[in-house]
Image 1 (cartoon, rainbow, N blue to C red):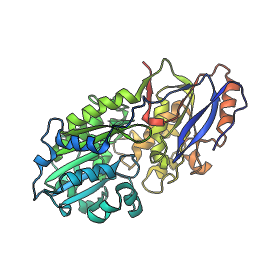
Image 2 (cartoon, rainbow, N blue to C red):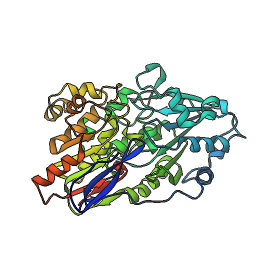
Image 3 (tube, helix red, strand yellow):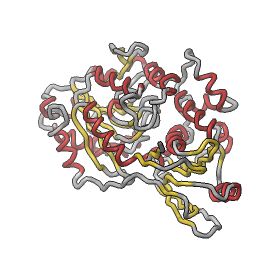
Image 4 (cartoon, rainbow, N blue to C red):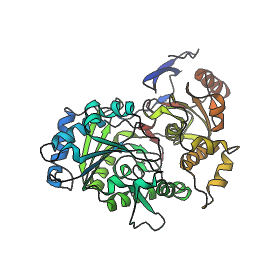
Length: 430
């Protein structure tokens, strides 16, 4: 699809949207900010195998397991672009002569997200793995599937997936990119919140932790959320980790394996160098995507793209986000129900700041409310109604070019930019 801006000296910018792109006509003086592009590693399978053989601060995977080992492997759910199939195929082949497939369980680290369907699992993992290896969707609400763990974090009771806890060898596999309040994805997040109980997740993502100024994009060492999930992962007994980084084409650009903290630190440093882009000053208008499919499947995930844009938007400035939302709000969880209970973002603050208030998805509501108090946010989508969008404190923008023209007419000196890849680019200014 394409939109038109009747103005001279324009440029067409292709913005990620679902499984395709939207051609948007914007003024030529708008900045286009993208991550530094890295080509795919020459041989992805070889790179993964090399990571299994030559890990960081760890024995090789084959030296960790034996023929009796019961193995649990944590992988991302359908909302992440992780190349699960090649990662899992390579791991399973690499240890096939030591341990049978019947000893392996693949755990879908859903956190509080919905379970993934059989069709989704097949698209994620491939028919061969789905038919030959036991796959378990984590359910954070199923008390029978959880085990309470000892923890060094005083204010969090840690409950983790029983299959993870009872395994002899625990392997995390993840996709590392900047995360809007945990610093980076991947690594320990594949244990918590990925395989954690709801009670644990509510504490990890509570108002106080999210309000901390270090709970933000690309922050690790001072980030209370990242530090807590790292403690939980290490104390759960992770034996091996394998994280990857990706380019905008969802191709593998780096493989980082071994001891979970060391490997994740290397991956984060690598990802930060490509994703973090410094700008000189904030903008009046920032146009962004939510990185296209799979991240832009719903409104809940779209908060990430909006947050990336907010990093460089002036106070009372405008954000325009493109997100397909093919999965709606979505229809599971408490995100929309909680949003709908408020008349505006200011009410959110007074309710969520109460230390006795706990509700699933309050973290996403909190982040969205903080942004919409400071900025005017519009959403271009074909997956939601105007009523649903307005309930989220957003404006429904059906004709993006009209908004651009309106803002330019109001302010001829308007300074604008486009983040065509959304939150895989994290702009910032000092």
